[in-house]
Every structure is written in C-alpha cells, then in structure tokens.
Length: 429
Image 1 (cartoon, rainbow, N blue to C red):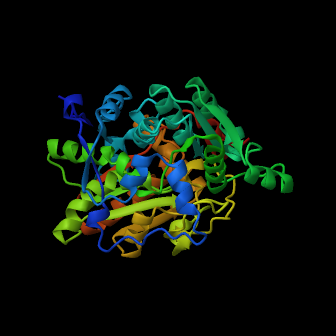
Image 2: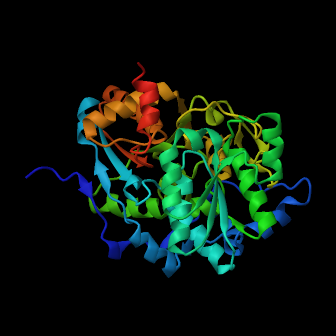
Image 3: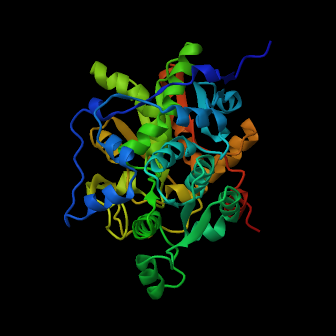
C-alpha cells in the first residue's frame, strides 16, 4: 500500500477554541499609542464591540461561537495536512515537509478563518454593512463570502494595482454580492486627495485601510481588520489548533514552522498554538522562520518602532517592524505581501530573536512556485511561494548535520486566480 500523504481531521473533532498568545509573550506587548486622542475613539465607533474587547483580552483560550463554528464547517474546515513527498525527494530526502493546506477553503486561502468571526461580531452590533481593504484579493474574497453567509452587505476597497491586475478576484467578490472599489477611492475624502495629486496612483494596503475606515465611519458601517491586530490573529489560530491535532495523529513533532508574512496573521495563526506551549515551558526548541517580499522588506530592513497601520494616520500607532506607513510599494504581484508593517505580537517575537525573518525576491519565489507545481501538482498563491526558498535552506542544513528534520508549512492559498501574474514574470515573450 502506498504511504499515506494526507492527514485529515474529522469535522466532529474541529477545535472549539481560538488561542490567544498575549498571556504567553515573553514580555508585555507595547500598547497602542494615540497621539491625537481621537484614534481610539474612532476604533470604538468603527470596530465591532466584541472584536475590540477581544483585542486586549488576557484569556489564553476563547470559545468559538456556535454560529462561527457552523460556517467553518460549511467553508471547508478542518483543512488537511499534505506531505510533499516529491519536493522532499527533490531536496535530497533530508527533511520531511508537511503542508497545512489553507488553500482548501472555499475562497482558496486562510483569510476566511477570521473573516467569519469579524462579520459575525459586526452583525451582533446591527451594522448596516462592513468595509475592509484587500491587496491580492484573498482577504476581500473572504469578507465577501463571510458577509454573504451572515446576510451582510460588504464594501471592499482593493489596492488599485491589484484591482486591475487581478480582475478575477474582483469578480469572485462580486459573485458573493460585495461592492468592490479601487483604492485610492473617490468615495472618501482621503482617496480624493490622493487621486487629485496622482490620478493613476497605484495604491497600497495602508491607503486601502484608510479608505475602508473612513467610509465605515461616515456611513454607519463596521470596519473589519484583515491582519496585524491581535484579535484577527487569534481568530485565524483555528488553523494552528487543527494542525497540532493532526501532527499528533501521525506522531510527528515539527522541528521548523515556516510561512509567509503580509501583515503576519497567516504565519502567526499556524505557529502561535505551537509556540505558546514552548513559551509557557520556558524553552523554545523549534525554529520559527517567516518570509516576505524583498521588494517590501519590512522584516529584514524595517525598524522596530511605533508607526501608523494606515496611511491617513486615522488609527492608533502600533509598535512593529515597519518601513513607513507612507511607503508606496512597487506593483509586485504578491499583493498580500505589500503591507508596510508586521503584526505587533510577531514583531515583538522577532525582536526577541524567537522568530527569524527572510525576504525573497518575486522572481526567485515565482521560480520556486513553478518547480513546486511541477513536483506536487498544486499551484501555490504568489504570496505562498515566498515560503518555498526556506525549504531549500533547511534541507541544506539538514544534509550537513546528518539529522532528518520535520518542517510544517503554512500553505496560505492557491494561485489558480493568479496565473496571469505568474505568466507576466515567468513566461515573458
């Protein structure tokens, strides 16, 4: 019989709680700063009340509401773990590679895990609609589907570069009933100011956040956060909680946990439930490595300081690795990696040396995506491809040490709607 390469968790064994890393951090997380005295008041108005409450909770485990659990099951949870045997062979069989396949959700990425929670809590506040930002379109697609499942209206502000480069993501959001607006947007005062200076402004996630917050505030909606903040990461830890159970089923204990960082929620969602156990024990033995875009090098060239999460500086300042809230990234196709900062909890862990950082160029990452597709038959999202070069580094180190290592990877999404972007880089004529 062929070796089993897929590890499934039965639906009746889905975790019932999210994990919150705040009580297990090596030191207190630096609190948000509000220089104007207006930002926190704005948050109280635009964020769902329960989300704001959970942002600062010190509870280690938070019960998942039944309404959210029901929809987790509806959209494809629990997701499988797949062993990448042919990639292992290509790398010399010095490592075992397990992929937590968040691409198996209905929207094709990990983003639905928190979108359902945010929209559910917005509904509890009787919001007229929800707003959010999106880069590559994965988060926007997730919010659009979550809104449809909770019968809410959604307004999605999509980074202008991606709005035109990734029309199928836009169509996907529209299929779910959302309204999609290019950002900078003429629907907001901030957007109109930017467009007046540059009618072809490429946009950024920081600008799209500002658009979404302003539109929600002025029109009676609720803003849902796509990454970075503690509550969003906590909602997404359903993936890591599942993975812990799945690895226990096969008797494997990862030596490395790797993944990519746009704002940080994808990687943190897988890593934190494992890392929390180690932080409580007082000894971190696993190696945690997060990767990002060399074109937007916030992890390797950013400064650990207080900065605004949005370009219009509407929101409170957060202490994080950042290359500046006014940074306008080049129009790279891995749109989800174009954010200027790193989640405060992940930034703290990087600053303490507990999580390592890597940045890889788009061209190198896309070549790995093509190789992965040929070997494993699955096309990764452009963002996800930035984790693949790490595997070669780990494999080389394992060969030198002679010890076979086990690697758990957050496979954050598929690239089936991004083939045009791959073609632009890999198949130029």
